[in-house]
Length: 327
Image 1 (cartoon, rainbow, N blue to C red):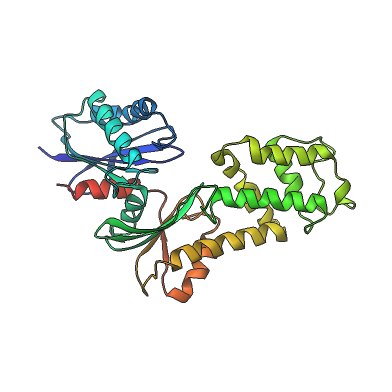
Image 2 (image 1 turned 90 degrees about the vertical axis):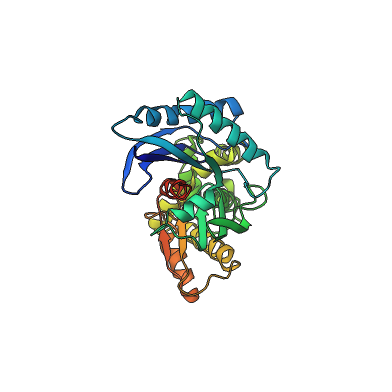
């Protein structure tokens, strides 16, 4: 009977799972559920969400299809290299529970870092090279023998994640407030961000671009921007990043400078890993995926190192590829 594998990409925003043949070829079936970072999602909730992904895949296991023989889950918030890592332990237990609930017999399974599955999702499932991830957070890692051996940044929204979606949104909020105060250059970001958060009075939402007397702008706009920065979780603040991208595309110099600086940070993060000329560099995350808004800027900054980014949508294909290596 043909063997099947399950690959799972457990992200901070959503979980995606895929069933595939161990011998290669395309995905047979996929499923998805909500956020899965074990450091922010309660264990029982994580198990339930994983089970919601596993069950429809297990239902496809049949005499005419094959049997599930291996499972790999790449988990944001897990550090498999550390035997005492709480995130890895929680994810492993939750996945075991999910497989049992989904009707999957006990099979070999691995919890891998999200950088490892992201890198393995690159062209020809590479085993050596560098990966850069920029979404809500940001980090880069060196992969050796399909294992993460060095990590740069990924320190979270408060201490790091420079160049990430959260970082971009926070810089935009700061720039908007500086503009309103008269301490920074004029920018359309104040009005755009206020509108995006639903704050401010209709007549005040345009304040901050070319409005004279910016320091006298209505306090409601300022309060709305400050509230947006303090009231939301990091992932909610990061959702303002597309506003900055659109403003830059429309010619806002301040927004463009923020995106340039974000790309500088990401390039610096990768540079610390000293990529060799021609070495595989896989990128993913909303900002560095195939249509990611920072990809052109980042690619230009990688040219001096003679490396060309290979963007992938996510790590799901990499999780499948790593599951196949277990058989």
